[in-house]
Length: 160
Image (cartoon, rainbow, N blue to C red):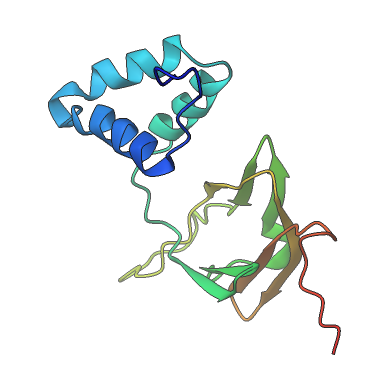
């Protein structure tokens, strides 16, 4: 409030104050910042836990994420040697999960085994405004098309 009793609504000034406060936190202060966020927010603890727990480095199976346009993306996963019945794709609790169940062949004696045909479970976090639109499995490539849900009043409408 200013001395005249009116509220200051200068957004540049507010932004400078917020950025000045955040600029105090560096990598060394990250635990303090996260502690303040978790103490002063409701529902953020689950979000932060999911964020920090999802940092596992898994590189099997190999995949691409292709941005088709502003509201649609494709996840392409290479599944050489898998059959359609051995692959399961589902969404649950804000995650897209892809699982592959491969039976181990004990009776085969490989001179060289270059194809990693092992069972796996891989997940990707998806936001609440994202839906799975299509799933295809052709020629060892699993393609999952996801898109943002755009409310009717936000969608583009051309009038002329």
